[in-house]
Length: 158
Image 1 (tube, rainbow, N blue to C red):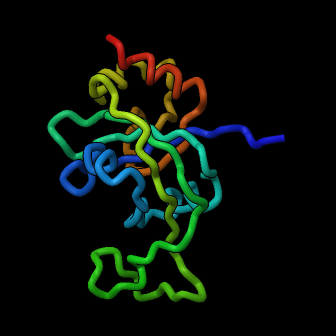
Image 2: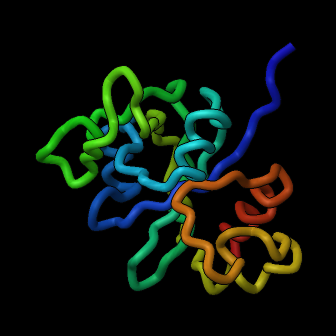
């Protein structure tokens, strides 16, 4: 018996790493996450083959721009060990790493960006706890139910 496929939303600032960058490289380590809850989702929840909604944040029109998939099991984020990295963590050791990541594989760009403002119009159907519509939520990685995944992708074709 195979494990049930899970779905996730992962945010990236397009100036740092965009869907176009992922399309160009094919597979990329999702490094630099420094939130324990987001780390735990990657470390404990994500499995190879899970679906990923790629979301551009901190841009003129934030929204879902593509689909990716989880391409590796979780492993330690090397940037935590590099004193020259913006993501360096002096408390992390190779024996006891604090930060983990997964590799993410490009699947496709959406035909259009599904903007945050449009997503918010579906808050009731998504559920008030859905992090994109919940007030004060700052998570960069979070789970998406199969129903939320289906609803969000249905918005691709206006």
